[in-house]
Image 1 (tube, rainbow, N blue to C red):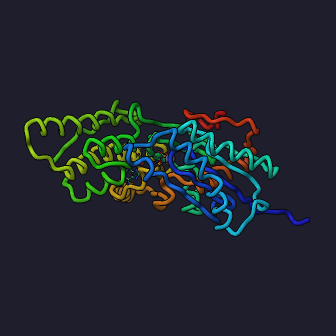
Image 2: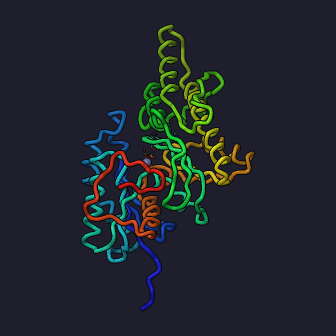
Image 3: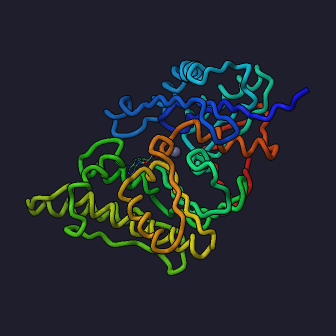
Amino acid sequence: MAEKKDVIILSIETSCDETSVALVKNGRWILSNVISSQIEIHKPYGGVVPEIASRHHLENINKVTEKALKDSDLTFSHVDVVAVTYGPGLVGALLIGIATAKAYAYSLSVPLVGVDHMASHMAANYIEHKDLKPPFTSLIISGGHTQLVRVKDYNLWEILGETRDDAVGEAFDKVARILGLGYPGGPLVEEAALTGDSEKVYFKRVYLEKDSYDFSFSGVKTAVLNYVNSNRQKDEEININDIAAGFQEAVFTVLVDKSIRAAKEEETGKLVIAGGVAANKRLRELLRKRCYEEGLELYYPQLLLSTDNAAMVGSAGYYLFKEGKVKDLDLDAYPNLRMDHGHNLC
Ligand code: KG4
Ligand code: ZN
């Protein structure tokens, strides 16, 4: 009998406010990637409300799965593996995806793979860049996490540094609120900064200890708040766009410096960026320039694959499956899962 070579993965992502299901072939090719965003639902609250997120995942997950199958022109019978995000993320939201994944894996009699959300952000680059292989240095920047990672192999990595307080996306969201820009903050701060002058408002760059790869962003967020409050008290006019530009520059200067230093010291020659904040065009521009000057190759995914989606889960899941790292049907959600020293923890 001819050996079946292709591996078709049905992947599910529900860690935050996107219900997404994808079909991915051999970890690199997207057959479909349906993303149902809840942004409009959470907008009036100024941020994601966990209970509401879970309820909408539950209402949408089957419809999104049906659409993903339809878009791929496949049926359940083609599915070889089910992959699902099992942390980090909102526990109630994760559980909806996990319960669905378990039901499909059980009823189809196929293996179940549990995927770390941060590792999947990174894996978005395997879809975008078909020839990208570890080792490389990766900066993963999302709403909940900020990590500088040495990726030694597909399932083997070491965290070089991470944030000691706010994640970078979280800082963007809070600054957007301070500036009255609304939710979600990242793209709105980016847009405001486009017409702002970063040299008009300077915020301190926070590097921590000399050799540290860790980050701290709560100081710059507080500095923005203090700047706004003190000017308002003095009845002085503030320019939101200049503040947004000044904030972005303060945060990105440190992110760029540390990731370039890590890529050089680790001698991987490649810097791979991932996560929602990696969608930011100013950050991409700064990194492109520095990587060119330093002789490093820079990789990033297209915008749709930077923010939460299930295709990236299908890519990360493929490499776990290839190494036999499958889960039992008692898989649980790990809201604080941490990609750590190569061990897929739970
Ligand atoms: O990776 P992601 O979609 O979800 C999490 O895993 O958190 O990242 C969402 C975060 C939010 O904090 C959002 O404000 C930020 O990424 N973000 C951006 C941009 N687009 C999304 N931050 C800066 N500039 C952007 N263009
Ligand atoms: Zn994410």
